[in-house]
Image (cartoon, rainbow, N blue to C red; front, side, top):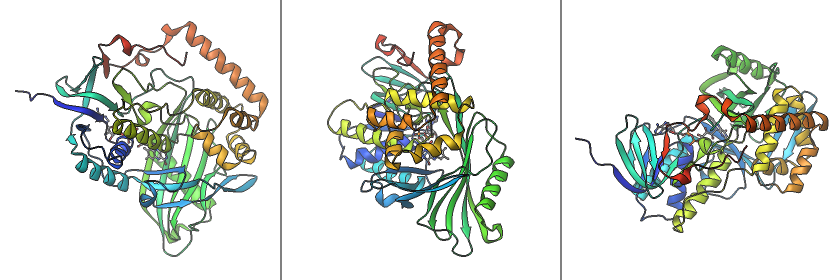
Length: 420
Ligand SMILES: Cc1cc2nc3c(=O)[nH]c(=O)nc-3n(C[C@H](O)[C@H](O)[C@H](O)COP(=O)(O)OP(=O)(O)OC[C@H]3O[C@@H](n4cnc5c(N)ncnc54)[C@H](O)[C@@H]3O)c2cc1C
C-alpha cells in the first residue's frame, strides 16, 4: 500500500544551486519552526560546477570562496583592458562548499529529504500536491519552490546557449598570476554565428581554471571544445608539457528571450534558471539566485509568502532581447559589442546593469555605448517579432504551451503573458 504524502509548510523541488542557497539562507535567518522538505532524485555533493560571479565583499559567501579579484581583464584583439571593479569583486565559488553548507542547514532545519523524481504538481490555491513521475502523491505543502530545469513558457525569438568547457590546470611551477583574472578574452577565433571567448581564473600561481566559452545557437563536439581550449592555452603562451589537466568542467546555460515563468500558480514559485534567474545576454545566474534566496528566507522568517522579487527588471529583459537579436543577426560584432560596453562605462556600472540594479539614466548610458544603427534595426525587428507573436499565438509550437508538470485547479493560475 502507498504511504500517505508527507505534509510540510515549504517544499523545495529540485535541490541544486538555487535550493542550496535557499536552505543556507533559511538557516542563517534562524528559521526553525517551519516543516521543510527537499525532493530531488540526486543528493548533490562535491564539485560538479564552479560559479563565477560578482558581488559586494563582506557577505555569507566570503569564507566559501576559492578566490576573488578586485581587478579583471577584458581583452579584444585590439585592446587589453584592466578593469577596477571596486567596490565589487569577481569571485569564484566551487559547488562543494555550497552543497556542504546546504547539508549542514538541512540538519539544523530538520529537513525531510526525499530522493525521488517529482512529476505533476497540483495547486488548489491553499496547498500544493506534488506527485511522483508516475502520478502517486508524494508530498503536500503550503508553498512550493520549484527549481527543476525546464524550458521557457514559449520558445524565444532568439534561442542561444552559453556552452563551455573548462580545464582545471595544475602547473609544475608558478606560471599563473593569482592577482590577474581574465573575465573575457575575445582573441579566440570567432564562430560564424555567435561569440566566443576564453577566460582564466587563477586560484594560485600553479592552479587555475581555463575555459573556452561560446554564446551561439549550437553545441560543439567534445573534440571541438578540446581543440578550442588547446588553442586558447597556446594563445596564452602556456606550455602543455608543464601542465596537467586535473578536472574538466562542461556546461550549457540558456541565453534566450523566451519567458521563464516565475509564478505559474498561486503557491508555486520557480527559482534558479527555471524561474528566470539566468541573464539572457550573458548566462550569469548565480548572483540573482543568491539575491532571491535571501529574499525568500527573510520572507519565511517574517511569516510572509516566500516570493522573491523578479530576477531582473522587464526593461533589462527587453534590452537583452534586442542585444541577442543584434548579435544573432550579425548586426553587431560580439567582441566589439562587449569591448565598447566596458570602454564606455565604469566596470561597476556594467556589472550592476547585468545584475538589474541600474537606474533608467544609467541604462540609457549603457545603451548609448552600443552602435546606434544596428541596435535601432534590432529594436525594430524585435518589435515586429512581438507583434507577430501577438497576432498569431496559435502558431506557437506544442511544447510552448504550459507543460503538464504544473497543473493548477485554481483559476488564479492563468495569468496574462506579460511578455506579449
Ligand atoms: C557547469 C556549470 C557552470 C556554471 N557556472 C556558472 C557561473 O560561473 N556563473 C553563473 O552565474 N552561473 C553559472 N552556471 C549557471 C547556473 O548558475 C547553474 O546552472 C545553477 O546550478 C542553476 O541552479 P538551479 O538550481 O536553477 O539548477 P541546478 O543547480 O541544475 O538544480 C536543479 C536540480 O533539479 C533536480 N531535478 C531535475 N529534475 C527533477 C525532478 N523531476 N524532481 C526533482 N528534482 C529534479 C536536479 O537533480 C538538480 O539537482 C553554471 C552552470 C553549469 C551547468
